[in-house]
Image 1 (cartoon, one colour):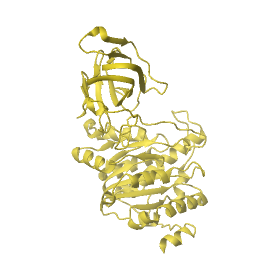
Image 2 (cartoon, rainbow, N blue to C red; image 1 turned 120 degrees about the vertical axis):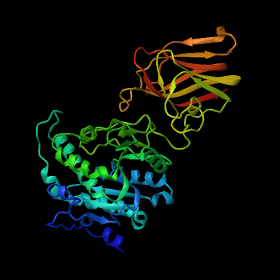
Image 3 (cartoon, one colour; image 1 turned 60 degrees about the vertical axis):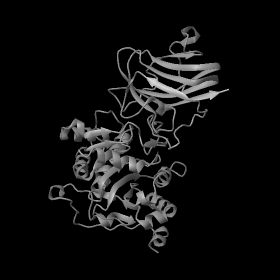
Amino acid sequence: LLLLLFLFSPFTSQTSSTPYTASRQRQSCSLVQKWYDHILLGSFHKKKTQFLTIGIPTIWRGDNSNYVSKTIQSLIDHSTLEEQKHMKIIILLTDKDDQMQNKMGKEIASQFARQIQTGLIVLVKAPPKMYDRLEFVSNDFKDDFNRTLWRQKQSLDFAFLFEFASGSSEYYIQLEDDVITTDGFFPAIKSFVLENQHGLSFSFCSLGFIGKAFPDKELLPLSSLFLHYFKDNPVDFTLEYHKAMRNCKECHLSRKSSLFQHVGRTSSLKGKVQDAVDPFFEREIDMKVLGGKKARTVFVSSMQAKGKTIPGDAYERAPGGYHALAKQEDTFVAMLLAPCFVEKIMIDIVTNDVNDVHNPILDKVEIDLIVCTSDQDPSFCTLLRNYPFLPDGKHIVVVTSRLLSSFSLRFTHENDIREVIIREVAIFPV
């Protein structure tokens, strides 16, 4: 009945002259009034009844450019009912226009009525007066008027959401409204944070603020920082301030395979197109998508492995592929136990500067390819120097159409060590 009333009536919000404060220190800067007054639909308790709260601010972008439903559906599809008992998804409606906020909320409520009833999803509205603080100020980023206010609004949204979510679960993770996830994301997050309980922040995606997670105790301090610096800094810069204040480099951890992928193109900033994708996204549990057939093959590498990955992870069904550090003259070798005629080989590889793990450089590595028809005689090997990637910058395709005994990648870049992920190797026998 409550859901029907919500779907066929305009939004109403209650306000209070007495601000809700999570602590005495926040009385002068709290954005959240009585937290229950901000709930539009769904149940919510500040009793740490869940392990993980997922926060997603969203805004109306036009009939053909609203991604939030796909994001919510991806979270539902890739988690079990048992896992969902330990999760809460907070959708923060951030339109300043009540009509657009009304439209957005009803659309989400109609699509996910069951999940709202079960308590998995709660719809929340930010107080419109919060945005009265927005004003253009000159900045070091040389942003124009629209981008400056867009960036400030994002900081205020984060400040509100972090404060609202505080006290509701053991851990909190921030997502954007235009991402997808992969099978097993919840147990992957849980195992990673529990293995690193000293951690103060965790990254499960290499793009911006997507997939950044925190223990509950960090939410209020972060909310205060977002509010304090909202006129000056983007949210990711403010997060770096927070890390510096904590003075604990080993307390900020990144999972090498990303659990979330950015899929939106239409930004919430009008006129901006956002094509960024995470090359380290851990795809669905059936990771290997290039095709090919599984010839019996042994993989070896001289590279220094990252974590517990092994060279064969690029070929078998292991998620994430083979992670390693590659220096000049390192090799990655595949040896077929039974040589066979092969039409082509496809290799999906991405690389980073090891000192800049959040900025993937897909074509800043030089590779020689060595293809052999016999491992007993080097004269039966062909050396292809500086073998080219496809235009997408991450795939190598070798057309052989001949008997194949082995093939190997030899890294020839100079000076720097590269972080390499060989995500997939596919062999196509004739």
